[in-house]
Amino acid sequence: MKTGLWKRYGAWILLTEAVGGLSGWLTREGMEFYKAAVKKPPLSPPSVVFPIVWTVLFALMGIGAARVWGAEASPGRSRGLGLFFVQLFFNFCWSFLFFQFRSFGFALLWLAVLWGLILWMTLTFHRVDGPAGWMQAPYLLWVAFAAYLNFGVWRLN
Image (cartoon, rainbow, N blue to C red):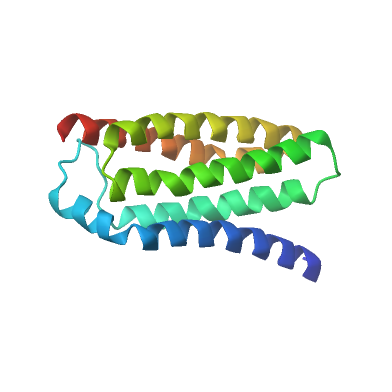
């Protein structure tokens, strides 16, 4: 792979991982409370699973965005990258709503909007670069699972 490609992929991956890492770091106290005191629904994975899964998902997001960024300039490319940043913002904010503010019901609504944004981004990415779109499928599925967990936490607490 050419040096320029490594830099492009590295920059996009670093950007998405940094957003996820910052969100996790800023909400760490809320996460500790969640681990210790919040009732969780069935099928809740152990806490160690979440940072592993999110690291992989953020990397896939970054790779997908890098592929779209490298595609020929078009309205679809611009729309896809715009959606990427909007959904990344929604993703970042969800942790605050859920962990810091413990607003489980509002966080669930926010997550539903996030899921819709991810779907829209995925479809837009796919039109620009097929593999970039497919790389978002695990993210879409994980956020659907997160919605189940969020709903369960809201109902139990």
